[in-house]
Image 1: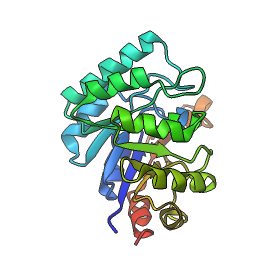
Image 2 (image 1 turned 30 degrees about the horizontal axis):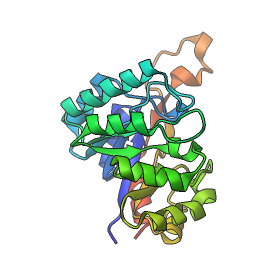
Image 3 (image 1 turned 45 degrees about the vertical axis):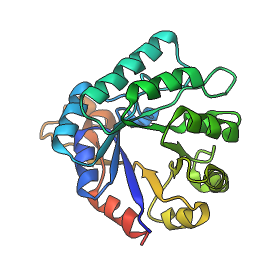
Length: 242
């Protein structure tokens, strides 16, 4: 079985580590602590220049919910077009309406603007009210995959719904488990769900290499620790599937 490993990264350095570890695809984000927001143009350009793996920036103008204003939609539309211009392989999107249904009209416009790039529908899916109705709508709008934790905070707890969605999809769209995917559970998730693509952030922290630390900020995690991904952790994730 040939599996695909997607790693969510938060900057150039974590992307570099994920690629070194053998990631097949990068979901490029900023602010992963908020669930991921659109990375800067400079970050996208540098990652595109440096790495040859599939690059999918997330298109999300802010943290919080997935109910967006018209102005926020216009921002997302412009970001999609920029990603296409910069040679990205795809983008990651998701929008909901206030009643918990998929914002089909707006998402369809983003998919259309992205073509011929691929489009992943992100975990806004996990906040929708009817996942099986949403599945059909997302297939119809032309997305190539859905990132989901089975409408639970951790995909380990949502694995049964993921399995049902994967069966219902009947190879019309890729169902990609994410949120809590680790080397300790990825084989179980593959067996239980039948999925072949997996998403993980493998988030860690590395100590700042600053030699001078201002005494008033010695206990500041914000400035003394940086986001990090261990390349070996990515390798171990794939090894656990074999």
